[in-house]
Image (cartoon, rainbow, N blue to C red; front, side, top):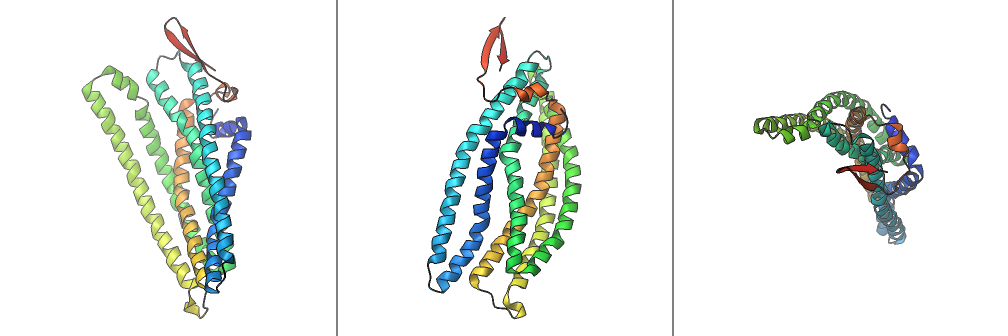
Length: 308
């Protein structure tokens, strides 16, 4: 199974549980997206001497809180079960391999597949909510602000593409070294161990440096968006805005730029995921096992055999 097909297979295999948790997440994000709007309405109503906006804001916030709490509790049960089933099946099919170092590394890396479904994919969905939802709501506040946001999208996409290419190479080199870890430690040679961790540190520093440089470039453009949007939205052009509307505009600008910050991160995670899938070489049976079934520990001739 190659490429990101593995993610698709995983999502299909656990589609009912994942659909439920992603539905809860989308409702949670909808509440998060609407809160700045209702906050602005509440401020405007308070200025007029009305508490209606505060009541509506409280109801929206309470609904968001309840849905978010339920999702977090359900997520842990869902994804820990998926990982236990996946890694047990994976190990049981490969336990006879002699290259324990790679097997150990791959069992650790396979956790990142589940982490992608649990953390990274929702993070990407949240970014889409923030970018698309904020642009739609900002249009009703001030269409000129939307134009500024669109202008900045193209350079962000170009930077993210170049960043993704570089991160793909660095991630591959780091994972190459990680696969050797168990065998190097097992040999117990101090010089080899020191060299191994020094190499891992080198690649991690390079990855961190790329992240920092990319962060700086994106944030420079974010500064431009925030400054330009606030100037456009102020009474600079002779239009006096309500305080609540200005609060709403500022919050949606922040949501939009937080979505922009997620684009390079998403590119990096997808590049890393492709490298992991290429190394692990998942087979159809690794995923098609019945989900959440109880694994059995069977001892045969002094060796532990995992079966699912």
